[in-house]
Image (cartoon, rainbow, N blue to C red):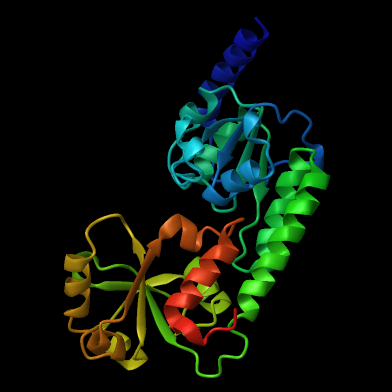
Length: 298
C-alpha cells in the first residue's frame, strides 16, 4: 500500500511538473550527505553503475541508463534511456528512492520534472583524470553510506592508475594521436581538449594533436592534414573492422597523414576506453601498449 501511495503521489506530481518544467537544470539536486534512503537507486552514467558494482552495492540498483553496459549483470536491469535524453516517466516508473546521475545527464527539462516529483538526485562531477575518478568513487560511497568500502576502492584504483601512468613516464617522443568520433557525411568529427578522449590519450602517454578547441567538432580536411597524426584512435562499435578501416584510411584528409600512410588505427570499446571508472587503469595500459608496444616500462 505504501508503494502504491508513493507511486500515486509521484504520478500526480509528474503531471503538474510536465506543465511547469523549465530549464533549471541541476541547480536543485541534493548533496550526498542529504540523502537518507538509497534503497532503490537508478544509476545514470556507465561509470556510476560500474562504481556501484565495484563497491558490492549492486543490490540497491533497480534501473540503469543505456550507457551502463558493464558489468554484464547490469544489462538485466531496466533501461531508462540515454543519459542525455532521459524520460521522466521512464525513470519514475521504477519507483526510485534516489537517482545517482553523472554530470551532463538531462535534458534539463527532464531533471526539473524529476525534482518536482520529489525524487532526490545526486549529481556526480565528471572529470577526465585520476582525481576525477577518485572523486566519483568518494561521492558514490558517501551517497550509499559505504564510505569505508569507497576508501578501499579508491586506494586500489589510485595505485593502479598511478602505476599505469608511470609506465609511459620515460617516453620522450610522444605518439601524436587523433581521436575520431565519427565520419558522418565524410566529415571527420574529432576530439579537442577537455574530453574523455583527450584525457585517456594523455593518461596513456600520447599527445592529442587537436588542442586549439575544446569538445568535439568537425574538422576541415586541411586541419587534419596539418595536424599530421601518427595514430587514429576510434571506438570499436562492434562491426567488422576491415572495411571501416579501409574507408577511414582512404579518406582524403587521413590518407596523406603518417597514420594514413602507415595504416595505424586503434579501436577500443567506447565504454571501456572513455568510461573513467574502476577499469580506467586497465584501459590506460591497453592504450599505452597499442601506442608504444614493448617500449613502455611495465
